[in-house]
Image 1: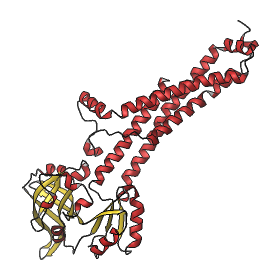
Image 2 (image 1 turned 60 degrees about the horizontal axis):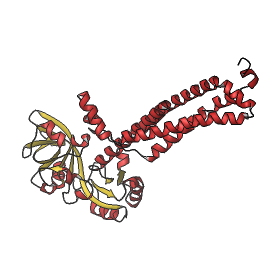
Image 3 (image 1 turned 135 degrees about the vertical axis):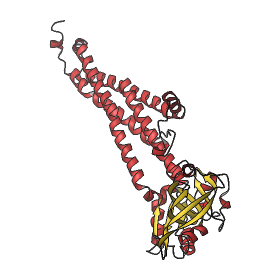
Image 4 (image 1 turned 120 degrees about the vertical axis):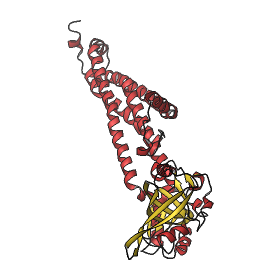
Length: 384
């Protein structure tokens, strides 16, 4: 019973943590990344205002904002870092992301065209050693041809604020500037795309397909799932493999149930024989041991579900205590994107776990029960 309970508890806790990890990373990612992007490859989006008006006709779209994306280098003294520079419209950006609520030290609207201000991810600013009000040099890789050769374009920007999304990848690599400054620096005629926010992010692939059909073939459409497909696919595969591996714990416990019932049948052969001589049928004897095994399986499963839910729902206090005892962080945020252990127990995981545990327990009772029903009274009582 304890073996089954431990197996079920381990499955529930691990899958709850993986669910929490997936949804927390997704939510933090989508606070920076839009649900759908409409863009042109390495060029300004033709008639972007017409494109924006067209996509807004879709009832699933609740927000749209133009943007310019480009790669650049940021330098401060001896520190140099590559960064994704995103030119945004400060007035429209809150429609598609939560950046405005994550900015510290200033408002998003303080990005004013022509003043060359920049808002850096918190980790990026710390890596470069920059504080609010200091200057940072942005180097655009698209250089200009001179008699001395191709010279990269450089421009000094003033750090007006930082932001922390809670997603390390973006906090350490994203810089926001005004879309007008981005167009001037990277020499594009207008926004390279339009970012969209939907009523239901789970419908992003479907809505992206609808939008793609309504636009010109040269315009590309990409949903948030496609942007991060490899990451989420890897996590889902890992979750399935963890389920299979940890289900073996329950299988081992079920095997222990087989051995326990076999030993019980061997020990109780005389009692079984006496019951048979009193008129018990082989089926009734078999039912006795099946009920015994089923009770062990059901009680073990219920105990495992209860303890698993107890641990999964209190990981926010259990995990920090373990880290304090260990004396070091168990989840480095630069590797796992998060610094705490989230948990999200879901019925879609718990119900199959409980069902599989009970089925394995019932299957484990078949052989010992059949063996008990085959006991011959005369042979069992011969030496008693």
